[in-house]
Image (cartoon, rainbow, N blue to C red):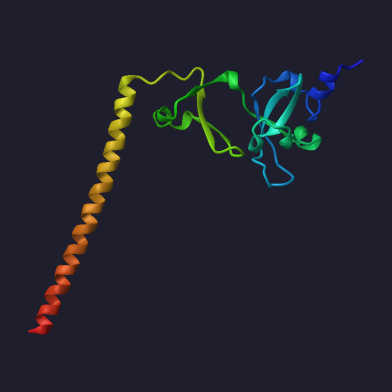
Length: 164
């Protein structure tokens, strides 16, 4: 005889007991209204459900049996560690972003557990790169302003010759 939790763990068409709570799945929503196309494995009352991340962890966004069958694992929390937002740029492409939009926007950044922690040298290289990019942007602005000034001077000279 199957227990109620066993039935609930198969509610979404897959055996949810083989995944850890917090695992994220991607799926194709049948309706795009209030759906992210990303579901989180949550546990409520001893049962496990796949809930679309738009809804956070509420029962409103539980995936249908068909959606659960096609869902694919996209993120396993135990394989990652969360990092503060200011380190996301230092790590670059190694970040994973999770969003929740129902109760306000939430973005969390994660890197794989085996990713080394950034060193002071990494931080300074990143800051140098950002400052160099800012300087290049300002230099483009100065060059653009100088070109505008030169065009205006030429036009003024032309108008002065016509007026004389």
